[in-house]
Image (cartoon, rainbow, N blue to C red; front, top):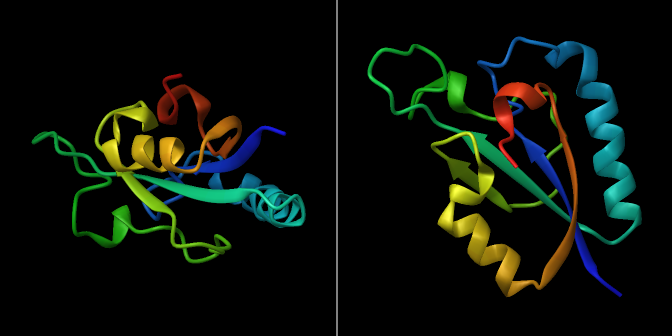
Length: 114
């Protein structure tokens, strides 16, 4: 049986697009993943670009949103649009032999480059 994970992408304080509309559904997805004995993984974006004001390292805006259900300490940081650019996340996938993914978040056009 393939090992699966729910990946929650970029639900952070600086996220404004669609966030309040989808947080309830995201939290329901987290509950569902727990019932399915899946890993729940959180991806945070941090923006290193000099000219930007959002998702800056060390700011409240880069923190996970307070109404997001946190059920694990599997929290990884990405600095580019692709979550797989996080070496720690890629290592987690390999370590746990994860072969199937469910993705959830607020903005597929900006937060996931799969």
